[in-house]
Length: 359
Image (cartoon, rainbow, N blue to C red; front, side):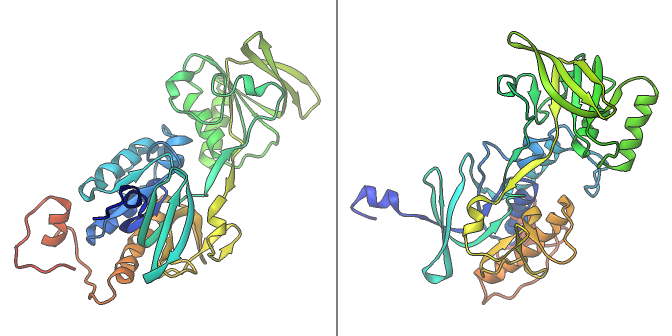
């Protein structure tokens, strides 16, 4: 033990792996590493686990998770956190990773904005699109209403029930929330600058059905000003594509213009990039820096699809590559959670014979 307490406190903590990003793919990486007996520390700039699922669309239904015909985004995060519990990962929330650099012995130093300092044998970057900010509604005075009457995400759908709503945008988020809120709102207008929509065809078709049934209206045009009554938002002034100037009543405006993805410090960590994504191989999902891996939306490779389920697959293969990177002398065996006593013990669902060997 050091005789200098301040020096001991300043020493970085040695850990096996660090996962950067606590979205769905980062959370599943905890599980996959845990099955192989590898512990993890996970760091995220947000105040809680969930990434975009929690921050941007917690109530949005997801339909393409195997064995779950429908699952809310926040529900998915809650399930992944519960699944990872047996492996006792250490979470560091509200911290941005500001430094990743190689150190002696093939390990990596990781420093955060909150002063956390770790030395890891391997690093997994699961940071989604990096740090992100929503594209704001570019109207004078919008600052006065953001978070009260102007929103860039939906935390609780019930906040908008019985309200007069204007939803701006033409992508999946705008259309999904239009369909979800239409029959719960007092009135709803979807405003998009073009006649064409970028959302899923089935959702576009459902939106048009609601318009035909007189339950909402859709306008082609642009918002030009906020309408206010002292400190209250009362609507939007809109200039339509056919030259009309309309005054729309609204209690709340939901603007879904997409995100400004920013890699931030990741771009300075010495890894090869392609179109602002980290290049990886499809065997290990390792970056150009040995020992640093990237999974989920932050990576790119031939045939890449930005799907949560694809990220789960990447996490599974990355776990085996990380095991080999950390313990190159060990033979690797593919074991199954249904039959492996070792894995069942790690999961806390069975005892293992004391004579059994580890992976």
